[in-house]
Image (tube, rainbow, N blue to C red; front, top):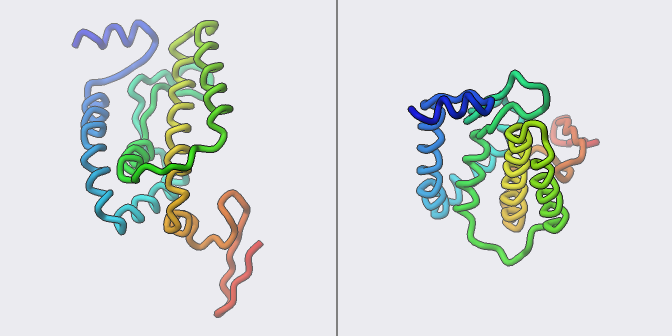
Length: 179
């Protein structure tokens, strides 16, 4: 393959298997989203996975890996969580409510993109922008689904407090206590 020496020259490591899995996942995201659109019960199961996967071991691949370099960015990674987010985005009907903090998020993204031009290693800086884009995707999908009353109850099941607060539920017979 002609692109493997190019990837090695810019400082990343990749294999054709990773790209095959990535292309297959991208190709399956749209049909999966359409399939989930007509099946709200399965969509709730996927939302349960979205709530579970961040706490489970990493199910991701690095399309370009530069894990040997210092920093918090290990490459251009794509995770199962990203694929589920894209499928859920395609499964949800368009909402009229805008995403909160979109100006601040957009401004920060522009600053990160501009800072790539000043970086000693632009591919590493692009890895951060890639990670930021993944975070924005999940944020957008969660904000968009937040108008659906079933989603917060599924993702926060067993949690009497709103997401983001420390909550411990102790069952004592029929009563429960939360902090």
